[in-house]
Image (cartoon, rainbow, N blue to C red; front, top):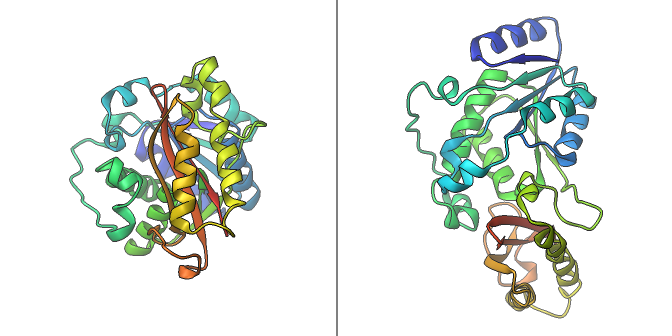
Length: 280
């Protein structure tokens, strides 16, 4: 695995690979890698000649400075994991390398950017879009891989690529879970042992919820899920939403869309967790 910290050096290396007819699969991350990331990388490696991974904790997508400061940084451990999946190139730039000057670009994602995470974390998706566009321009991948745990982020990136007519394919990957059902996330390592034992209740409740879709309306199911989650005192709920799977708008009736997803975001201690499950 070759590691680059500058845009110029990485571009030069990847230009050489493309000239030799190699296809490039790209997995952008903020590090603190786990098996969910590795599954994305294995698929990217299988479907492309070259695997490129970036590790960059993007400061402009954090609303909370404490969250940014506490975000886990494990570069040595991450590098070993990347070697295990035969990563070809690691891009690990500094903030100064990525943002030599402030990027004031503003993206309008319309309805998609105003719900759920967009409502609770103002400016978050704009920061995501800025960094993802930069990374796509630097790596020029044929395919880029994103997990469905961050379902709304995936939808935003798909829309960004469409808006800017960027020549690459966005490949979604299903949520990877721990054996007890907790969605894998770098933030999980910040949970205390007691909190970690409670966290799987999120997925347990989501699984129970979708079994009720034939007897409850979307609003009734949303309220039922909220009630079940708030019964666990350790959970501090941000939102529960049932939305169609394209623009993630709330639905009133089950026949309002061809696909629907149940979303949840909550705090467990000081750690904010998100999860989702497809209803149909």
